[in-house]
Amino acid sequence: MQIRKALPGDAKQVIPFTYSSGPAAFEYVFSADYEGQAKGFLKYAFKRNYGAFSHRCHCVAELDDSIVGSMVNYTAANFFRLTLGNIKAITAYYGVFTGVQVMYRGLLMETLIRPPRRGCYYVGHLGVDVARRGQGIGQALIAYAQTQAKNAQLQSLSLDVSEKNPDAERLYQRLGFKAVETRVFRYNRPSLPAVSDHHYMEAQC
Image 1 (cartoon, rainbow, N blue to C red):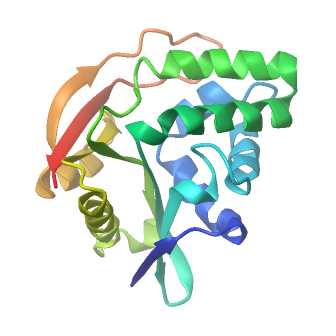
Image 2 (image 1 turned 135 degrees about the horizontal axis):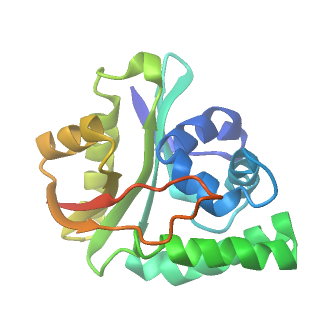
């Protein structure tokens, strides 16, 4: 298995993994005009060179010439620049009026999934091919993130996991992550997909 940086042409294979890591949250924020619009935005943003959803923030796991998993990584030091990139991508994709609505929902989501604290290497949107789960792909991606964090002289990894995804949480616990905080999402609406509460976890590098 090879872990490598993502390329713009990987979008078709990567976006289903990214989306599977939090479909309700993605729909809540990015499906402003119709159900499923989030996937279109994620594909658009992935191909850009800026923002936290860009291919530049993604790594992929490749096996037998196919991408079988992916994740996003960034640090607190990069967060402001990535946020500006997100604003640029959202405005370009949705236009100004709808873009403001999307950004507002994104701010609400940040009460649940917050920017990484200083010294942490954040792991986000980790997804693995359903047919390949249980084969160590998620573990390999986390190990790659740990190496990247150590190379950057960071002290810990951090991530958020839905309380409705106990299998993923058990994997993270086996890999040394500990739940630090339970974060409650207080902005669910009847007209939008229900977003579950999350556990914030950290592991030492």
